[in-house]
Length: 237
Image (cartoon, rainbow, N blue to C red; front, side):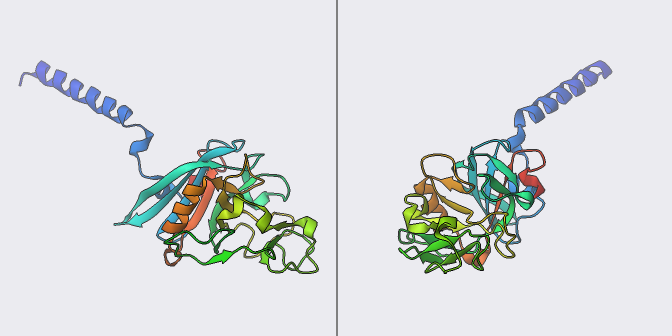
């Protein structure tokens, strides 16, 4: 090949390479879990992503670790707190914000029976089921049945009254293992209500049922909540 022809061919190849890179877009990179600092050590993961901290809507996606890589198993629209999202470590109770971070999922519960195929510890809600949010109670941020005397009803959720939200739910382990008073209690992944949540993450009921049928407790699923970028980006967790 003549020198000028070789130079033109090289230039054309470079242009094609650049165009191919630009055309690939951000979706061509590694899947979200592979870009995260931690996924909890299990082989299942749920991510809940909002565009920014002020968002009240976003996306929930569930993933499986298979063949050494993360594979998307399902995705759905999601709702967050009425006042958006905030860093979990500095969250304050009663702010209607969804805490960001990486959390384990202790167990599931629901007013309705567990969906077919559910392989997760599942508690049925009864008229005596409460979630204590009373900062002065020894049962703070715990399921109680019945409600103990030191947990005021006005500072607790009577679970059976939250229908359809608690038709099916997963407990998100925010402030759960070593509760800090005043940080918040009763953060769940649950069925959509009428609008934004008081701090939980919610999805359509059909999606919640699919998540419960997919989740395998033996595979130690975790849930990561965050934003697309910034200090609360999912890739931080």
